[in-house]
Length: 265
Image (cartoon, rainbow, N blue to C red; front, side, top):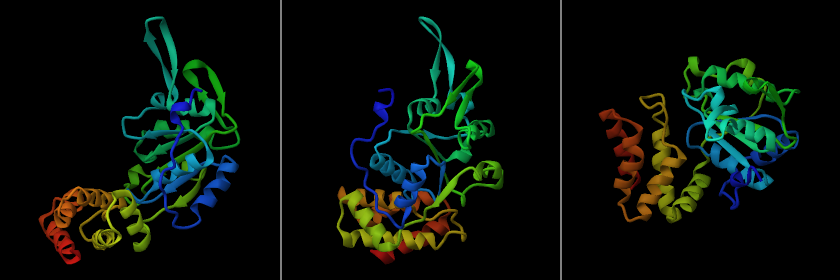
């Protein structure tokens, strides 16, 4: 199969925080385009990996950036030994063969890239390949999912309303302390008591958002700290390495975060 390498064979660990699984399953049953909104490192990518496994669908993931062009998504002609040949891009591959296509941090892509997805998000469900003079009808199992962090983006990089209104949306945030501690303990292999202390550090950092920090510590960062502790690193040193230093270069904020770490340990 063309998409065999995109299948997720083992269940990705995911702890639900609400009814997001049931809501996504309903949207998937209708092949409705879905937008995942939430801060960095809160579990959006893990969620879609879990859902792809749960639904038995291949998952084609594209990490969007400012250099991503429409050709990178849909494909291009390449000069090879046998001559000029067409190679499908990841989006076209998903459209032809029926995968979930996940565009991570969609607002980082160039404007011409986001326009390409419009015909796939309405009743047309088709992808025009202008360079091939071809219109690819979406496979019945194709679904488009995009993700971004609305709190981090500038106005210049926000999604256009004409794009936003084509999607249903699920909003993600950081889990409540008990659930987040369970996630950190499971993913890093440390004990619950230690995971709760690390989560307390994360909560204190998030209280500084808007007071010098653009973002508080993500669940991903807390897991990194837990993994360092599991490797024998002292808790305060692990939190400094995985949380404090990556979050800010400001000396005063570092001191405030270091004090929060000290208070938790």
